[in-house]
Image 1 (tube, rainbow, N blue to C red):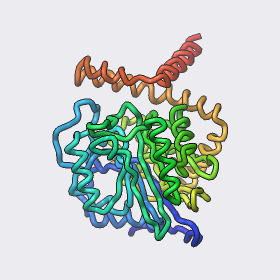
Image 2 (tube, helix red, strand yellow):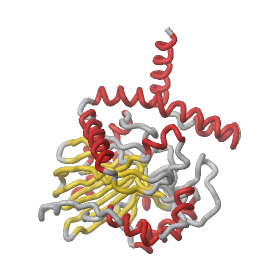
Image 3 (cartoon, helix red, strand yellow):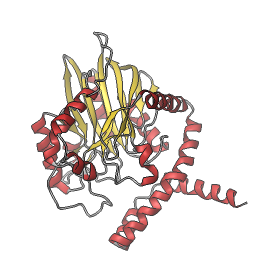
Image 4 (cartoon, rainbow, N blue to C red):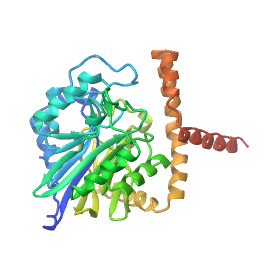
Length: 379
């Protein structure tokens, strides 16, 4: 029997947004779903996402049957079009992420066609920079919400004549957000960047969120880490630094991090005109393949306690960054070194060197922190 999540009715002058992290029923999860009753699965997802005026997420890869892979990726993720009705409960997606160009322009345009067929709006990627920067506009019974998506400058940025993702373009992007604010009741900015397998944002994520809010965003939604992070208030707005995974293949995630990545949540925000009034989460857990369901009472209480603690931690930026460096040097650094080894053995020296060209100052900082900790242990 499907478990329906009960939610309180919002006050008449407010609207409710539900937001989740990475969505892409691909690889092992897709194979498992193709053996099940898709209609039943879709109904359970609708029940889980029931009760909001707007449901949004991050579509972590294309919806396509295309077989021509982007050679620059370690893993190429895609959602089979035959499964597309599963995501029909969503109203909008950001496409600005590191997997949306996994199958090139063909995969991207197939995604547009599939989302258009479902009536789902999207933003964050396009055939050129102008198209990638266009907002998704939602009319919630006279309440206008605008949403844009952005990702790291290293991940397939679009240009004047080249397809790709939307990235921060200085004053041009800030001006675009200000204009959206003037013409909307509420502005959402989704940002996909940072390290994987962390519960704490790094300095670049904090700066990106501040930049978006200062330009006029009311709600910043972050993802990419696969783990849940906290939510903090900034002015009348709010920043959710990490929405975690929601509907994503878990078997391709390294076993050391897989169990934590199975913990996910539906983030709910009660909003008014250019303000976030309140928020809470509905804790969930995926099955071994990556399909989400509401957590039982014991796990839900534990996840909510963790979420509240992570949110309180964000009030102390210095401690947050310290925990970021500690967790990054413990989790992400060994994972990154493993990826370099994989690239070298599977795709050659050139592929490994191309990945190294994407190293940022924050990577060097984390490496230095790791070396200092290692030296202390050796004393």
